[in-house]
Image 1 (cartoon, rainbow, N blue to C red):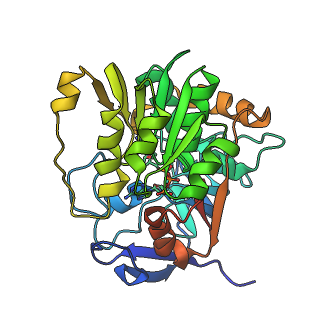
Image 2: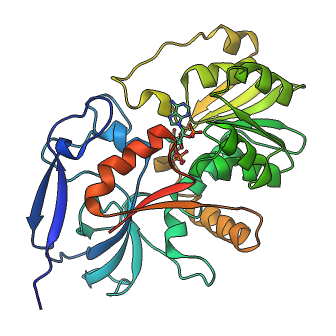
Length: 336
Ligand SMILES: NC(=O)c1ccc[n+]([C@@H]2O[C@H](COP(=O)([O-])OP(=O)(O)OC[C@H]3O[C@@H](n4cnc5c(N)ncnc54)[C@H](OP(=O)(O)O)[C@@H]3O)[C@@H](O)[C@H]2O)c1
């Protein structure tokens, strides 16, 4: 039998705009050796996340940027092949920061460290990279803990047809809110209502986007779950009611650029809005409870979640671009 090879994509230079395979060096190495307190795991699926693009940039952020020459950082679903960690054995499925490579040495620590993927009958393990994992937990934390969504609220969700957004909107519905989603193109806007059960879907690419949004929020909005930034966010803030709450989850519209942006704070002041940025790395405590609840909602058919799967390690850079083109439906994964 051939010895296993660890294919890796290492960051060769900081991409400008779209990412290409040429921004990475392809290397082959033996799999890492097991170490005390860690497992060696073989990557099955890579989670493709907008934040991957930010990690490639040398700008202030919530984690250190990926260094030039380092394996590209990414979350992944992996199978343990060797373990020197109590409670983990070969064959176990785990979540961890596998990176863009076939084999990773993973150890516990922090919410993104190493976690067992529970075997739940009826749920594919890759759901724990999306709706029952980081994306769903982000939606849960932002909508429930940060925005404090409640019965009778009107919520706007941006990037609403994506992984985080579709979960955030459905969670708000479960909590008794009226939910308006914003997404790109008429098909996605329609799917928000027909497939995900939102009350209205608005296409931000339509020339009459602002009129559509106004018509969909005749009584304004109390909560904004913000994933996009830029003009879409400003339009949504324009519909907020006094003392509304904004859960600032992400700003994908600026990730491909050099960074930085300027906004008009006057409406936030005039309407006395509460704006709170939040990040999954602070959600370690609620993660197990949120993941359990999300899994039961999915199993009961109360929440729908889709995946877009792309094959092959070398597809990872182009897959990342798909998030910025809106070419994904739901959670975007690369299968190795
Ligand atoms: N705070 C946290 O801890 C945390 C954790 C995970 C994710 N997030 C954030 O959540 C957001 C969504 O992430 P995700 O993983 O669920 O990705 P996703 O929503 O599944 O995919 C990204 C979507 O963003 C939309 N988009 C891309 N560029 C856009 C632009 N310029 N203007 C408007 N929409 C644009 C596209 O949808 P359309 O076709 O509708 O344009 C695309 O499908 C991101 O901002 C991400 O950073 C935050």
